[in-house]
Length: 351
Image 1 (cartoon, helix red, strand yellow):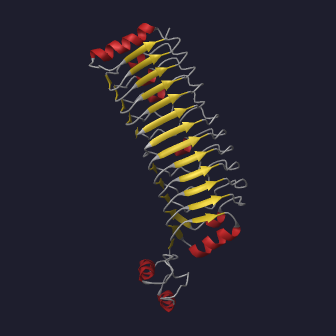
Image 2 (cartoon, helix red, strand yellow):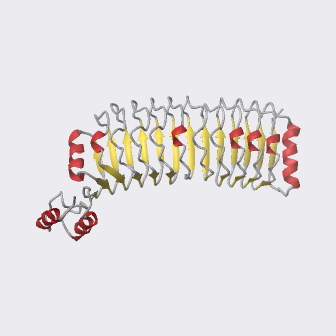
Image 3 (cartoon, helix red, strand yellow):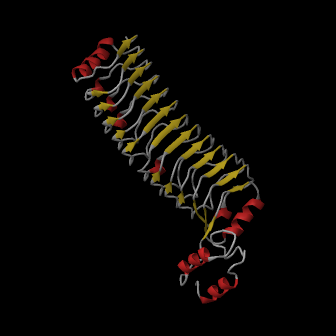
């Protein structure tokens, strides 16, 4: 219990540089620390400390300095970087509750687990997990519910899933998942509902987007050079307010998972998806705010799935789709023109 005995100890160190009672890590035990102390008076808990500044951990000495300053419960006002370290897990960070800046975990060739981060509930900046070859997933981050900026998962060669992030509901800007060649599933992200941008590139073992079902609106959506076979998992998506790029997805067969998508505020680019045969997943799409480009989809032979598209704000390009009859492309252009479209139309080198 935080009681009068603790108060007298605090008073004895008032005006000193004692790190135990310098609760805001300001360099001096002062009235700011007193107010923090008073908030915990009478409770059965340890006094929470807020460490000012940014910290980089590469070795046990760096880690000891941080944990000794933090004590039994602490947050960090700036960035925390763990890079080129020799740790197999992060168990000594068990009392860390939040990070005010970015959390960067990169180039750790021994690290295999995030075990120890179970009290971490918030990252106000971005969370970068880059080039950690033995980390198989997010297990250990079970209490993380909010990331203020970006979540970047990139070049982690054994990363298989996001298990451990079931409580994550909000990412302020972008979820970027690049070149994690063992990634199999996004299903643990089932509670993610608030996000600005989605970007996937590579990830050779990932065949669908199951786990994204609570996301109804994004600014930009980019699916490039993936091995996705379908867009299952995006069934809750109703609006892309910016641009949608679907390019170089060599295994993509169908896009039926987009059945609720009604509005694209920016441009739509569908390019070089070798196995894509139809656009039936766009059956609810009524408006594209800027350009629409349909190019080099060699198996595409049916675009009747665009039957509800009435509004196009930019140019229309339908080119180099070897299996698409030219008259089918022209039918779409004629329908848009009859609805008031007056932009540039380019249709050539189709079947």
